[in-house]
Amino acid sequence: MRTGVEMVAPVEAPEKAVLTATEVWKAYRKGWWPKRQELPVLLGASLELMPGEVVGLVGENGSGKSTLMKVLVGDLGADSGAIDRTESFGYCPQVPVLYERLTCDEHLELFAAAYGLGPGQLAQSRQRLYEELDFARFAPTRVEELSGGTRSKLNLALAMLHDPALLCLDEPYAGFDWDTYQRFWDLTRDRRGSGASLLIISHFIADEERFDRIYDLVDGKTVPR
Ligand SMILES: Nc1ncnc2c1ncn2[C@@H]1O[C@H](COP(=O)(O)OP(=O)(O)O)[C@@H](O)[C@H]1O
Ligand SMILES: [Mg+2]
Image 1: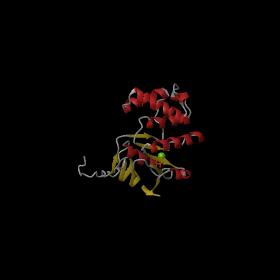
Image 2: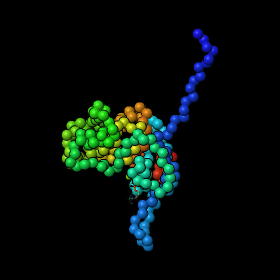
Image 3: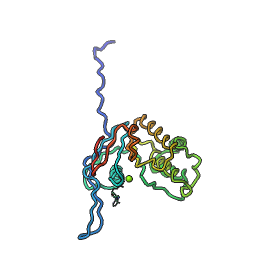
Image 4: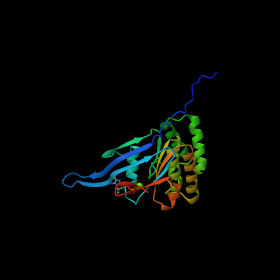
């Protein structure tokens, strides 16, 4: 029966950013008056990530890339500015934070518990990451016996284990050989394909075409390229 009511296409909600940083200021301070020293690092840095974007954060050594990322993930408090971030995110710090006496498997189990993953999800995600980054043979090996490159793989896998909507990666491939570097970009493309966003700190200009957008961090501010 015709009702005479026309179907109206639903109005699509505008896509919401997964990460927005507005005018972030941060200085490191040490000592007390009259010898108080202040090192201003971020002077009003802003950025935005939409779903499914791969965005690069590029800058010279010491320009404040890691400081900005620590503020973005909530590891470090800013002096002022606003951060709006999805709850589903993973952070891969520049310097791996690992336990020397635990194995790769034990690390992944520990993080799975912290992320609230069930045994099935852990098993599936772990196997996938071991394959993608090619380090399954080190599953029972303690971190103290791992090479720098394999530590970096584990560091990255820990950030990705729960398949977050936003990945914040601080120079994730610094310790990778060429094969792993390629694998990293395959994996990035795959996650982006399923809608995840990635913010990747890099100092390789050669990577430019791999990003949807790039911000340069210059004089404490982000400049879209
Ligand atoms: N915890 C800290 N205390 C004092 N100064 C710091 C600290 N962390 C970084 N810095 C300084 O802040 C500046 C920016 O550092 P960082 O954010 O690590 O830069 P990048 O990641 O771009 O190399 C550098 O001059 C660095 O020495
Ligand atoms: Mg850094």
